[in-house]
Amino acid sequence: MPVAPPDAPVTPKPLPQQDNLRGIGWMLFSVLTASAMTVSVRALSADFSAAMVLLLRAGVSALLILAIVIPFTRLRRQLRFSQPKAHLLRGFFIAGSTLMGFYTIAEMPLATATILFFTAPIFAVILAALVHGERVGPRRWSAVIAGFLGALVILRPGYVPFELAMVTALGSSLMFAGALTMSRGIAQQDGPLPAFISSVFITVIFAIPFAAPSFALPVGVASWSIVAVLVVTGAARNIADIQAYRFADASVVGPIAYLRIVFIGIAGYVLFGEGIDGPTLIGAVIIIGSTLYIARREAMKRRKSG
Image (cartoon, rainbow, N blue to C red; front, side, top):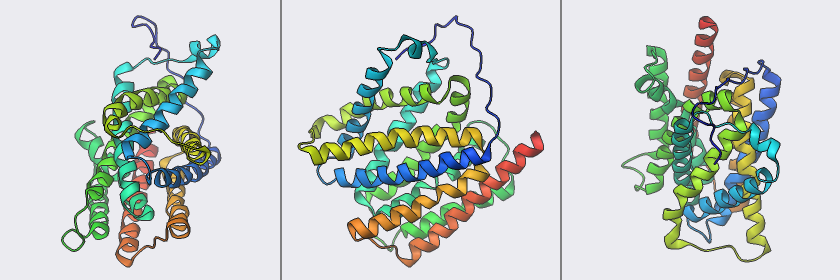
């Protein structure tokens, strides 16, 4: 992975002008690609372990990146990794989050898993307070508590048999929140493409030891076609998320992301015969309400500081 020389002057990329309409467009694209990616993960999980699915996606993505980047000197020169430690930590968070997320998708109903993944912004508030020393007021803490109550309504500990996927769903959200808190700074400093490339290669290294015991390659056109969908949609979703939050406030694009629940809920029902029960719907409303309130408070805070 190319890294800028330690003594090279670092000039931050200029911040993009706010363009909410453009941000909304990127988020809609993210919703569509993320939904297709989730369905492809479930389809591959019938034959492969979650770690192997992760290695297939990251490995094929890495080969495509090398095939595109190596022949073009101009493109290589445009890549900057000015914060290697930040890239490494963010890549680790993304790899761990994706591995646990893929396991959750394989083991839980798609809509339920997707709803629990939306606890990531709630974890992001906690990390902002504990790690970055950000002042979090009582209103946002109330929203955080409400969000976790929503997760408890869905998981129903003591009433529903314990499953490892319950833990990995929240663990995936926690690690994704860690990556989320770093993504904006890295994207502004180096651009979205280096942020994506570093996460792909770090994920390959991360996935190898987990996938080794169950290593297997797809056989047949159908399996490789699903892998292709997984790779393309995974890459597109990653870049679309970065671009959406670069161009628009989270309070604007955040609500659009919840369309994933609708699309994935329909796909789960049509393709896998899955439904959504009452407690899951109630928990979804609580989590969505909490995260929307957090996004609104973040936007108000930025406007006041600006």
